[in-house]
Length: 460
Ligand SMILES: [Cu+2]
Picture 1 (tube, rainbow, N blue to C red):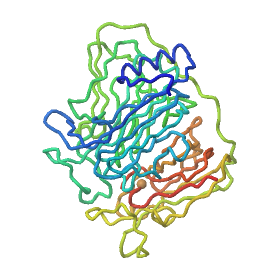
Picture 2: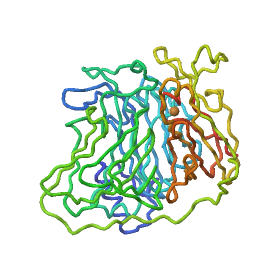
Picture 3: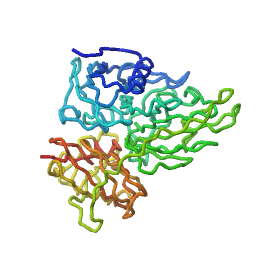
Picture 4: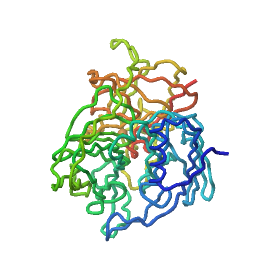
């Protein structure tokens, strides 16, 4: 059935993919994966184990690493006590493969099948409402579509960032801390490990490594700083930047990804680290140098061809969305209460143009036409409560060009699938839907998504 049937371990697979990429072989390859959703006792660090839900027994779940143009077949076996589904965040797929409309019942199997399109750093997670109790228990994994040039880095490393709200025994604490409207953790993890259990990044002077960061947290923004080095940010949400830039700190809102190059320019023998601004929660990646050095590796980054839409910046956007919130009772007594509110959560609903999902109005867009959209943060409730959090808006089924943020165009073309909306500000976007279907648009702060900040873009 498949030209290449291979159920390899991660490393064998990566090497195979790199060889294929290097030789430029145009093989009709197929990738077969099997993701079994199971309850797992997961060790975050020695002495701290929690009961997680996982794709394949590990947190993050089985990494999916494929090549552009490869046929991907993923068998999903649900061994959890409740129904679920899987969304391939950032991939542009036929709507039946996108996830949210599916319900994979306990004890049943569903097979996704699609062709990997654009190269880049993506991820997967359930999109079954309410999403929070599933994603927040560890149900996520990376999905990498390798580019040929990726094989020329000295190393290619994926870091999936998350946070967990646990007691000292590792038991999951439900709800949110007093005064919080979103669920934030007290233990932060990199690839499912915290503090001293996080694997160091090992470098040799002269090398050039590719780092892929994925924020799988349901609400927390992660700010990472690096010592003694600089990141060269090359991709946002898997899309190559027209103008990569150097920085010593990066910020990822929920759902966002950043790819960066790291030139090993430090002193051999010295140690460095990449650390979160909340470093006491355990998110610290040590950087350890081996002995010796290699000739400096030059960047294989390929500057993308310009593909921006030509849009009159003074034209009115086709679609205007206003993000807001309200108290579920009292001020907002129309029964429009999001389904995700649980008994012990604050009685907030989160709205788009005044309505909470499933009562939000669908947005109709034509297929294969450029659509412009302005998204405002009008979260007055949040402002009154001193909240001021950036909603992280994700659109399924396409990547969009960020035209401007608070009226300022980015330096160089910027393409994303998830974008934070500045507090009381706005973002202008443009996109083309190439596949017909109902595509979700929602806040990737999962408390907000479950609490109503979601609608559907109907492409016909
Ligand atoms: Cu939000």
